[in-house]
Structures are given as C-alpha cells and as structure tokens.
Length: 182
Image (tube, rainbow, N blue to C red):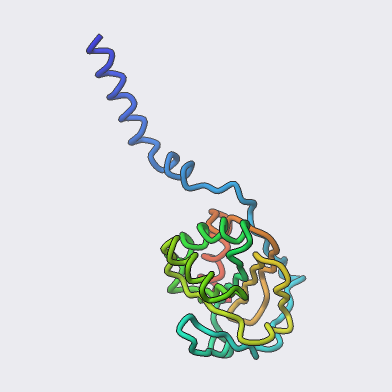
C-alpha cells in the first residue's frame, strides 16, 4: 500500500513538473472575451492630442506629451463590475509592457473612490482623471471603454466592455506593434 502511495505521489509530481505552464495558464486565464482590434483599412487617425489629464497628485498633464508613442487608454469606473473585473487583466499586462506602451487608466469617479479601489487591489499602474473633454475621436460614455493609439497616431483598438487584455492574442498584437515600430 505504501509503494502505491509513493508511486502515485511521484507520478503526480512528474505530471505537475511536465505541465506546469499549462497548469499556470489554466489558473491565470480569464472568462472575459478577447479584445477586438480594428482592421488597417478601417483605422482612423487621431486628429488632435488636445486633452488635459489630472494625475492622482493633482498635477495636470497634456496628452500631447504622448504623441509618437504607443498608448492604451482605458476608461474605467469603480462602480462598474466589468471595469473592476478587467482591471485584474490590466495589472498583469501593465507589468510586462509598461516600458514599451504608455498606459492611461482614466476615470470620472471621485478621487476617494478610485484611490480606495487601487489601494485595496494593490494596483500600481497610473491613474488619471479627465480634466476636460476627451479627444474628439474618443467617446467615454460607458465604462469600461478602451482605445489604443499607435506611434503613427492610428486608432487600432476601440473596444467597449470588458475584455481579457492579458490574452496571448492581445500580447502578440502588442508585440507586433512594438517590433514593427508602427
């Protein structure tokens, strides 16, 4: 009986070692749908970078500073369960891409509510408040809403609703944008 137990434990350990990546992926995966990207022929240029954002410290920044950079803008709300759910995916993606893509997590929530959520979840990505009318090409009518603008000023993502932004497909899409310097 002892031999069978030992053999069983060894087999379980061996299977775990061999399939550790698949096991991790199963636990890290999300039930959220894949994000959508825009086909090249349908991508619109961003005509203006005239948008003022307020950082958590109250310091205003101008979106013009982020011209010629790959930028992801996620409009979220602490009052939207979808937004809160997808922030987990953003946190994972942000850690790996924060040096290659500029992330803007913008909300119209009160600073107290937004800061409370970020502290509870221990999020470290940058949070901003809209300090004026968003860019003409963007509509922040319902959270969550996500846009991605390439270095060339093209809107390649315009996604409404929650999505699995940490998916293999979206990571491959980001890798291609970064590699091609588009």
